Structure formats: C-alpha cells, structure tokens
Image (cartoon, rainbow, N blue to C red; front, side, top):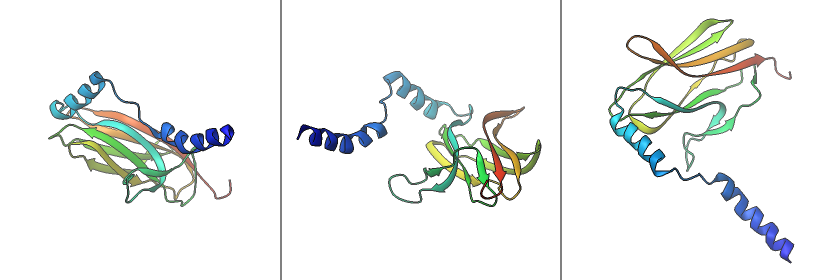
Length: 161
C-alpha cells in the first residue's frame, strides 16, 4: 500500500517539481527590474534562443517553443524556426539583425526592431532548402559596431540521414 502511495505521489508531484522555477534572490529581481526601467539605450538582452519545429499559438505557453529541434541536423525543406526571447528596457527600440550564413557567406538577413518588454518572444523561419552547414548569428546594431548576442549552427541534410 505504501508503494502505491509513493508511486502516486511521484507521478503527480514530480512533474510539478521539475517545472517549478527557482525563486530569484531580491538582488537578482532588483537587477532585472532596474534594467527594464532604467536601462534605456543599453540594448536588448537575448534571454534565450533555440531551433524550434513548433510554437504554441495559444494557452498558457503562448509564443513559447513547443518542439525543440536537437542534434543539429535538420532534414531538407523541413519548417523550422529560430525562436528568441528578449528583455528590452522600457522605451528602447534596439535594432536586431539576424544573419543566415552557409559556406561563410551571408545568404539571408532579417531585421527586427524590438519594443520595450520584460519578455518579448519572436521567431523567424530558418533556411532549410539548401544542403550544408549553416550558422545563424543574432546581432544588435549599435552606433559604431554590431554586438553579437548569440549564434546557432545546424546542418541541412537529405531526408533519412
């Protein structure tokens, strides 16, 4: 009987414990809040980025990545997105540039202007129509230079490889 109770507890509570977020310290929370309200002109923070096959369109996870693409290999012509999450200071409108490179040459460029937000999520379809090794660079355009915020590498392969 005790085993059934323990098993029931683990099945019901373990997923909740795994999904629970660690509470930030007061100093961590203050730092984020201060940056949001007083960080205008300092640029966006790329909180997270990943390759995603599906994005939630509604519900409690709206605009979050639903299916992460792992392994670095993507079948040719598969629809996959570069999913990104940003912290952008209030009143700021940083310019983000996304370079899609193959064979060390920029093949496609996308520009984003981000609004001020504690949690701004967006995504762009990545190129998967040409075989080979790709690199995605996420840059922020500054007055005198471009600041690299992140990058992801992936390979486009024939189906079944």
